[in-house]
Length: 277
Length: 277
Image (cartoon, rainbow over all chains, first blue to last red; front, side):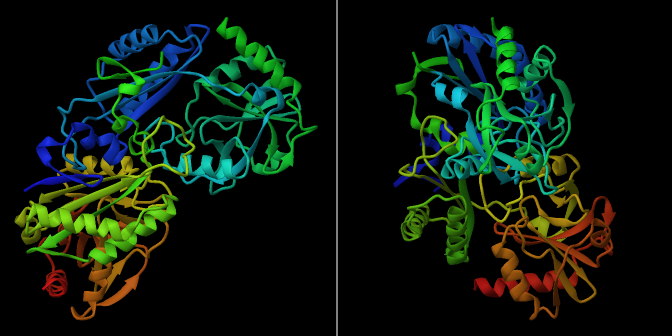
């Protein structure tokens, strides 16, 4: 008899909830997005939906109508009625008995949560510390997939060191990005960040940071940074949807400049927030 | 109000089944094993449990008693009463609101299935074709984790090409292993396979294949093969728990030797099956 065991309980196969057979659980066979709202307005919705569509396409999950995803999202956002909300959603390829090979007609699973954002205001005022971690991720980090084990291992390592984010360093010794953020350095009057390749997520917040750079009086240089260059930068920060710009004041234990959030970082935050209003 | 959306349905957070909040689903934050039985006897149980313990340790899932896992597995195997069974099980770190940082006291989720093995006998008799695929996986493939997106993409690519398995080739041009199997070449009288590194799963079947080599009249050489060397080999095969040894007769379209399963491969199968009896 085909059976399953859930914790301690033996259950006939056919009585097991289909969630247990989600390919997202067996293989991480799905993609996700995190979007936020500021004072009741969803930020950069279309950018996120476009990236989501690209992620779906990259892993060949077809027959998902982005128009319907947009509708669902707006419906849920309205129902939740949270002004500063964090919206998470994912789609997996579907549920079925575990098999590497997928069936073309599988029905994708959609899952979404909306919660109130609880950012620590201190982070923006005093900045955070970050620590480096080997970039052990797969080679398609441009896809926002559910394969996030290296990311959580990295972030938990950072937390153990009292740091708010882990910064990935690849085998060649270059910084790719944060485990859950884009990473930026300001050297002189130039804003620097890794170019977008298959190893880097095309961060939406990064896009708006670059857009804000000119008004903040900064030039832009997309190049690979080393930990040494980062530690010697005049300013560092990370960019992430849920927190936009967060100053970094310590890098692998080395204090950045005077140990306080830098003036250009502050200016970038101001310029960034003009996109929201 | 914190809410979730399951497919089309809006549900208050607190009413959502904890399965939806499994870290295995959000992050692939878990590890698994596949074990089989031959005629009512589980094969290499202790090897699999030992590897499972190593995987758990590698991703810092603690407080899992392997003795209890063994008991559950044997209990389920008895209840299923399937002579030639495929036993799949995984443990994830637990369920909770999505957060990269885990809590030390999370209760791991255990899930197991037992099904009858349905191997196509033709595969062993006529052999299979394989195709290469870029090894885009993360850098800790020695951990049997739920982050399997590159594996399923590779296997589906192979299936499209009419192949039974995808063989990963890394950036340096070397074969690491199959997407769901170990890969072997026989060149002259030498059995060759990639050495076990962080990029290769310590396959249990591989271990028994190497053990069988001497009796089969083969020397062993653990070294990295290129696709060219593989295509020119006198015999090729893959090794996987559910099928043990499967001859490979075509590699990226190139027919291997006379296109039929090789004599040493057959001999290895015979020797391998002596471990079972």
